[in-house]
Amino acid sequence: MNAVTTENLNLWFGNQQVLNGITFAVNKGEVVAFLGPSGCGKSTLLRVLGGIIPKITPARVEGKVYLFDSPLEETKAGAIDLMSQEGSLLSWRTALENTQLGMEILGRRNHRNKAQELLQKVGLNGFCQRLPRELSGGMRQRVALAATLITQPELLLMDEPLANLDSLTRESMWQLIEELINQNLIKTALFVTHSIEEAVVLANRIFRMSSCPCRIIEDVPVEIPRPRIKSNGALDPSCLELANYLRAKIRGDQ
Amino acid sequence: MKDKRILLPLLTALLLTVGFEIGLELANVSRFILPKPSLVLKALSENWPWIFANLKVTVQEAIVGFGLSLILGVGLALSYLFLPQLEPIIVPLAVAIRNVPFVAIAPILFITLGYGQTPKILIVMIVSFFPIMANTAAGFQSVNKYQLERFTVLRASRWQLFTKLQLPTALPFFATGVDVAASNIIISAIVGELLGTTQGLGFVILMSVSQFRFALLMAAVVVTTVVSILLTWFFQIATRNLFKKWL
Figure 1 (spheres, each protein chain N blue to C red):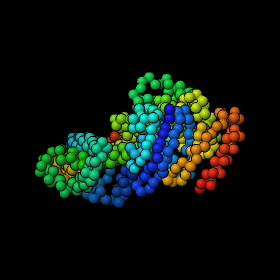
Figure 2 (cartoon, rainbow over the protein chains, first blue to last red):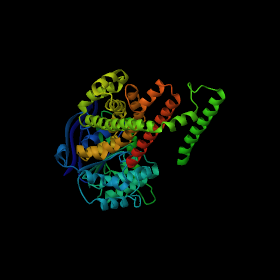
Figure 3 (spheres, each protein chain N blue to C red):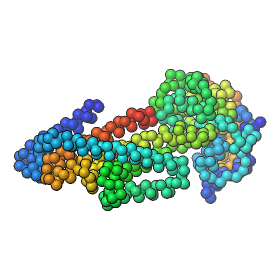
Figure 4 (cartoon, each protein chain N blue to C red):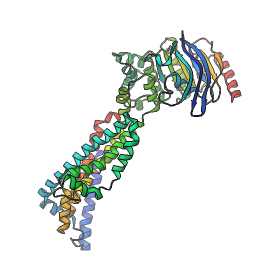
């Protein structure tokens, strides 16, 4: 079963075309990275897949989007969740309450223990009652990750989730996300990133995107076995090789 | 630190009062031009029962008017949150009402509503509903983009979006609106009273001026200032405590 299928997806904001004939299929269980120049329309694509555009951001959208072989509009609530850059946590809710939010919205009960377990899994045991402002940037993103996992979404969308973190924190988050992928807590995921290394470490496939209007230039499979980060924190040499290949290609695109 | 914030203004007021007393005595200023603080204090103690009875009237007008402005301000902000098509009608209308020179229309208010407390309550409401409405509406609109997107992805209902995101986001803005509005309620009630009344602090001021009792006038001014500050503090502290979690 395909988790996500798009057919000739085009999008315009006014007269400006942002997506140009996007066609791809992502299998269930795949982790796919969208990599491309800044402002090319990667995040816009993710928002179309999440049903945000054109619902709350007006745009003209043509083409088809299927999630789990059903049209996007027919997808059941809770099948998708979104993790963004910093700012997605509610400042008046504790880490635990933020983690439970998705379950409350979906009307599911008895989620306190599950939220505590997830916070423990992301390394925040003992920080449950802290407010977002009392946590570091990395910790906040761990809470955001736990919050998206609590509803067990079939598809996780991540929009530059680690963009605001320093390099050491980002690398520890890569390890965490890899673990969550291995434990099948992250099932199918699509994520947008500017970091070539991040794409190579986390993804099974990388879509190299053109500058705006955005189209897929290359579908790069990443067949490097996990874990791709060694215990000493170094990247697998195959990752570095692929990252160098992609860097050269992206420089050429620009 | 907290003690300093209360003590320093009190000490400053005390020093200014003593300074005025000595300065006015040394300059031999007539009590018909500027009465000494000691005379003001004497007038205040001698006339306290009368001042207090009128103070109660003014405070009542201010609080009832403020309560109504809370209902009106929040109600209008909510109405165009849920029915955005009403915004182009409500906002210009509210701006127009806010800018009506109520000094000029006061006679109409007194003719239609009488010289009792109702027109003063209405004036307090007109003056104070606008900052509450404008701030609350700004709060509803300042929802974080990423949070709104997540609620959309999770297919939150309109009610969930309101109760779990828009309302908590708007509370600090609402509290600011309350602060701004509360600081004007006593003054607007008194301005209403100055335009026509037989009771309230405005009436005390009018009577003192007409009888050249300037010490009593200054006593009424001091009471007005102190009560206005106390009421503003009260509402500030009340909103800060009530909405502590969201501020």
